[in-house]
Length: 211
Image (cartoon, rainbow, N blue to C red; front, side, top):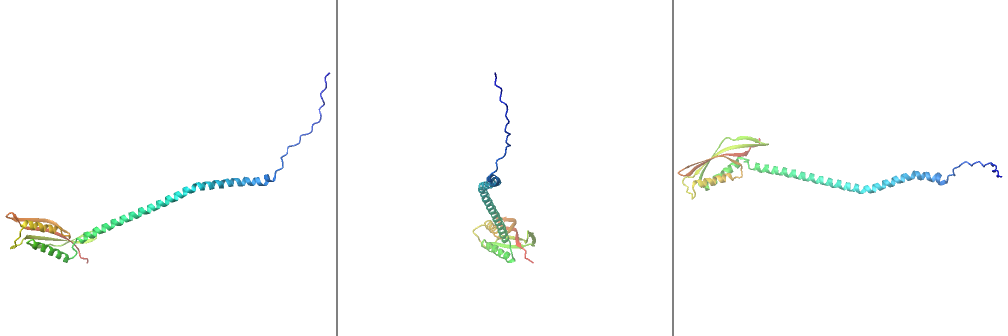
Protein backbone atom coordinates (compact mmCIF):
# COMPACT_ATOMS: atom_id res chain seq x y z
CA UNK A 1 0.00 0.00 0.00
CA UNK A 2 1.37 3.36 -1.12
CA UNK A 3 1.92 6.25 1.22
CA UNK A 4 -0.09 9.33 0.25
CA UNK A 5 1.89 12.54 -0.63
CA UNK A 6 2.17 15.20 2.01
CA UNK A 7 -0.34 17.94 2.03
CA UNK A 8 0.82 21.36 0.72
CA UNK A 9 1.61 23.93 3.30
CA UNK A 10 1.24 27.71 3.05
CA UNK A 11 4.37 29.42 1.55
CA UNK A 12 5.93 32.58 2.94
CA UNK A 13 5.34 35.50 0.50
CA UNK A 14 8.53 36.75 -1.31
CA UNK A 15 10.07 39.98 -0.03
CA UNK A 16 10.28 42.83 -2.57
CA UNK A 17 13.78 43.75 -3.93
CA UNK A 18 15.19 46.96 -2.56
CA UNK A 19 18.37 48.94 -3.55
CA UNK A 20 21.00 49.20 -0.92
CA UNK A 21 21.33 52.66 0.58
CA UNK A 22 23.96 54.89 -1.12
CA UNK A 23 27.05 55.76 0.74
CA UNK A 24 28.41 59.25 1.32
CA UNK A 25 31.05 58.60 -1.37
CA UNK A 26 28.38 57.70 -3.91
CA UNK A 27 26.21 60.68 -3.09
CA UNK A 28 28.83 63.46 -2.89
CA UNK A 29 32.25 62.44 -4.05
CA UNK A 30 31.45 60.36 -7.13
CA UNK A 31 29.43 63.07 -8.97
CA UNK A 32 32.21 65.54 -8.37
CA UNK A 33 34.76 63.09 -9.68
CA UNK A 34 32.65 62.52 -12.78
CA UNK A 35 32.63 66.31 -13.37
CA UNK A 36 36.27 66.92 -12.56
CA UNK A 37 37.75 63.92 -14.39
CA UNK A 38 36.87 65.04 -17.97
CA UNK A 39 38.14 68.53 -17.21
CA UNK A 40 41.37 67.13 -15.82
CA UNK A 41 41.80 64.88 -18.84
CA UNK A 42 41.20 67.80 -21.19
CA UNK A 43 43.68 69.97 -19.30
CA UNK A 44 46.28 67.20 -19.36
CA UNK A 45 45.76 66.64 -23.08
CA UNK A 46 46.04 70.38 -23.77
CA UNK A 47 49.23 70.68 -21.74
CA UNK A 48 50.71 67.67 -23.50
CA UNK A 49 49.81 69.14 -26.89
CA UNK A 50 51.37 72.48 -25.99
CA UNK A 51 54.49 70.75 -24.77
CA UNK A 52 54.79 68.91 -28.09
CA UNK A 53 53.96 72.02 -30.21
CA UNK A 54 56.22 74.42 -28.32
CA UNK A 55 59.44 73.31 -30.16
CA UNK A 56 57.62 73.64 -33.48
CA UNK A 57 56.54 77.17 -32.52
CA UNK A 58 60.10 78.10 -31.56
CA UNK A 59 61.40 76.68 -34.83
CA UNK A 60 58.77 78.62 -36.77
CA UNK A 61 59.68 81.84 -34.97
CA UNK A 62 63.38 81.26 -35.70
CA UNK A 63 62.60 80.60 -39.36
CA UNK A 64 60.53 83.79 -39.53
CA UNK A 65 63.36 85.76 -37.95
CA UNK A 66 65.90 84.39 -40.41
CA UNK A 67 63.58 85.07 -43.35
CA UNK A 68 63.06 88.65 -42.18
CA UNK A 69 66.82 89.16 -41.79
CA UNK A 70 67.48 87.69 -45.24
CA UNK A 71 64.83 89.94 -46.78
CA UNK A 72 66.41 92.97 -45.12
CA UNK A 73 69.86 91.99 -46.42
CA UNK A 74 68.47 91.57 -49.95
CA UNK A 75 66.82 95.00 -49.77
CA UNK A 76 70.08 96.57 -48.55
CA UNK A 77 72.03 94.89 -51.38
CA UNK A 78 69.48 96.10 -53.92
CA UNK A 79 69.71 99.63 -52.52
CA UNK A 80 73.52 99.55 -52.68
CA UNK A 81 73.38 98.26 -56.25
CA UNK A 82 71.03 101.04 -57.31
CA UNK A 83 73.21 103.60 -55.52
CA UNK A 84 76.32 102.29 -57.28
CA UNK A 85 74.54 102.35 -60.64
CA UNK A 86 73.35 105.89 -59.99
CA UNK A 87 76.83 107.00 -58.92
CA UNK A 88 78.31 105.32 -61.99
CA UNK A 89 75.86 107.10 -64.29
CA UNK A 90 76.52 110.42 -62.60
CA UNK A 91 80.27 109.85 -62.82
CA UNK A 92 80.16 109.00 -66.51
CA UNK A 93 77.88 111.96 -67.20
CA UNK A 94 80.22 114.32 -65.33
CA UNK A 95 83.23 112.91 -67.18
CA UNK A 96 81.47 113.37 -70.52
CA UNK A 97 80.54 116.97 -69.69
CA UNK A 98 84.12 117.75 -68.66
CA UNK A 99 85.22 116.91 -72.21
CA UNK A 100 83.18 119.83 -73.56
CA UNK A 101 84.61 123.31 -73.92
CA UNK A 102 83.02 125.39 -71.19
CA UNK A 103 84.28 128.86 -72.17
CA UNK A 104 85.84 130.82 -75.03
CA UNK A 105 89.06 130.85 -73.00
CA UNK A 106 89.10 127.03 -73.09
CA UNK A 107 88.86 127.08 -76.91
CA UNK A 108 91.62 129.72 -77.06
CA UNK A 109 93.83 127.57 -74.84
CA UNK A 110 93.22 124.57 -77.09
CA UNK A 111 94.24 126.62 -80.16
CA UNK A 112 97.43 127.72 -78.40
CA UNK A 113 98.34 124.09 -77.72
CA UNK A 114 97.82 123.19 -81.37
CA UNK A 115 99.80 126.21 -82.56
CA UNK A 116 102.72 125.33 -80.28
CA UNK A 117 102.64 121.75 -81.54
CA UNK A 118 102.65 122.97 -85.15
CA UNK A 119 105.68 125.18 -84.46
CA UNK A 120 107.67 122.26 -83.04
CA UNK A 121 106.85 120.29 -86.20
CA UNK A 122 107.83 123.17 -88.52
CA UNK A 123 104.23 123.57 -89.70
CA UNK A 124 102.09 126.61 -90.41
CA UNK A 125 98.74 126.50 -88.66
CA UNK A 126 95.72 128.66 -89.64
CA UNK A 127 92.21 128.05 -88.21
CA UNK A 128 88.88 129.36 -89.57
CA UNK A 129 85.73 129.21 -87.46
CA UNK A 130 82.22 128.80 -88.81
CA UNK A 131 78.85 129.73 -87.35
CA UNK A 132 78.05 128.00 -84.06
CA UNK A 133 74.91 125.89 -83.75
CA UNK A 134 72.94 125.34 -80.55
CA UNK A 135 71.84 121.83 -79.72
CA UNK A 136 70.00 120.38 -76.72
CA UNK A 137 71.12 116.98 -75.43
CA UNK A 138 69.05 115.78 -72.51
CA UNK A 139 68.92 118.62 -70.02
CA UNK A 140 72.08 120.29 -71.32
CA UNK A 141 72.29 123.11 -73.86
CA UNK A 142 75.35 122.56 -76.02
CA UNK A 143 77.06 124.48 -78.80
CA UNK A 144 78.55 122.87 -81.90
CA UNK A 145 81.34 125.01 -83.34
CA UNK A 146 82.67 124.16 -86.83
CA UNK A 147 86.32 124.95 -87.46
CA UNK A 148 88.64 124.32 -90.40
CA UNK A 149 92.41 123.94 -90.06
CA UNK A 150 94.88 124.35 -92.87
CA UNK A 151 98.25 122.95 -91.92
CA UNK A 152 101.26 122.97 -94.23
CA UNK A 153 105.04 122.92 -93.97
CA UNK A 154 106.47 126.23 -92.82
CA UNK A 155 108.54 128.08 -95.40
CA UNK A 156 112.21 128.57 -94.67
CA UNK A 157 112.31 126.00 -91.82
CA UNK A 158 114.21 122.77 -92.37
CA UNK A 159 113.23 119.48 -90.67
CA UNK A 160 114.84 116.08 -90.57
CA UNK A 161 111.46 114.46 -91.25
CA UNK A 162 109.35 114.86 -94.34
CA UNK A 163 106.09 116.78 -94.40
CA UNK A 164 103.91 113.65 -94.37
CA UNK A 165 105.46 112.38 -91.14
CA UNK A 166 105.03 115.75 -89.47
CA UNK A 167 101.40 116.09 -90.58
CA UNK A 168 100.71 112.57 -89.35
CA UNK A 169 102.12 113.41 -85.91
CA UNK A 170 100.05 116.61 -85.80
CA UNK A 171 96.93 114.56 -86.62
CA UNK A 172 97.68 112.14 -83.78
CA UNK A 173 98.14 115.04 -81.38
CA UNK A 174 94.84 116.56 -82.47
CA UNK A 175 92.96 113.27 -82.04
CA UNK A 176 94.43 112.55 -78.58
CA UNK A 177 93.29 115.81 -77.01
CA UNK A 178 91.00 115.25 -73.96
CA UNK A 179 88.38 117.75 -75.15
CA UNK A 180 85.72 116.50 -77.53
CA UNK A 181 86.66 117.42 -81.08
CA UNK A 182 85.05 115.45 -83.92
CA UNK A 183 87.08 115.06 -87.10
CA UNK A 184 84.50 115.27 -89.87
CA UNK A 185 86.82 115.29 -92.84
CA UNK A 186 90.52 115.27 -93.67
CA UNK A 187 91.97 116.24 -97.03
CA UNK A 188 95.63 115.68 -97.77
CA UNK A 189 97.15 117.35 -100.80
CA UNK A 190 100.65 116.73 -102.09
CA UNK A 191 103.11 117.41 -104.85
CA UNK A 192 106.31 115.83 -106.07
CA UNK A 193 105.55 112.68 -104.05
CA UNK A 194 105.18 114.38 -100.69
CA UNK A 195 102.39 116.00 -98.65
CA UNK A 196 102.04 119.73 -99.21
CA UNK A 197 98.95 120.62 -97.12
CA UNK A 198 96.36 119.04 -94.84
CA UNK A 199 92.87 120.43 -94.36
CA UNK A 200 90.91 119.36 -91.25
CA UNK A 201 87.16 119.91 -90.97
CA UNK A 202 86.40 119.72 -87.24
CA UNK A 203 83.48 120.19 -84.89
CA UNK A 204 83.99 121.39 -81.33
CA UNK A 205 81.53 120.53 -78.55
CA UNK A 206 80.95 123.33 -76.09
CA UNK A 207 78.55 124.14 -73.27
CA UNK A 208 76.19 126.99 -74.02
CA UNK A 209 76.43 129.89 -71.56
CA UNK A 210 73.49 130.12 -69.20
CA UNK A 211 71.29 133.20 -69.66
